[in-house]
Length: 212
Image 1 (cartoon, one colour):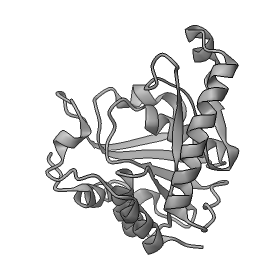
Image 2: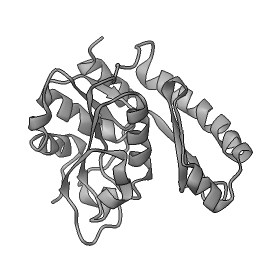
Image 3: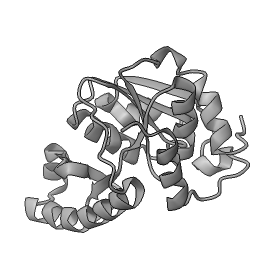
Image 4: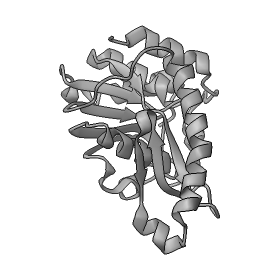
């Protein structure tokens, strides 16, 4: 399947998510590329849209390997078993958090402005991205959403590698994906238009569906 763009992918994905529609459902897009997809899902389900801004706490020797994640409001999730296995100290992870926290706060203010984040306590949270490659960011987002009180987490993406559920593990309760191609190299290869989403587009999407 080749998606025309993120909006097209979102509309197709929404057809697989109609069973989750309800007053306790919130759609959360991963900025930036996941937000246009999430916008179409939120519209189809009549649900409010928010962003889940996360920053991975990467290993000092391999920043792409997530040892944890941080989110807005001081939320922090750390995999202590992985830290021990790699010999990463608490001081090292704290140093990483200082850097990532500053960037997280900048992005949160940029995307959300003065609007408070939606209350996820007891809600069904549909976490949406434009696709999954390594799965580390999506997994971190689900862990943060769980920490924020969501009672049910649905991770939904248009395209992912065939082992994507194993990569996420138990961070989500349910998984929805349109295509899991055998020869997967990058998310962008499955889009005709994979132009980078701008900060302005993220802010506009939130303003479109946001319930305060």
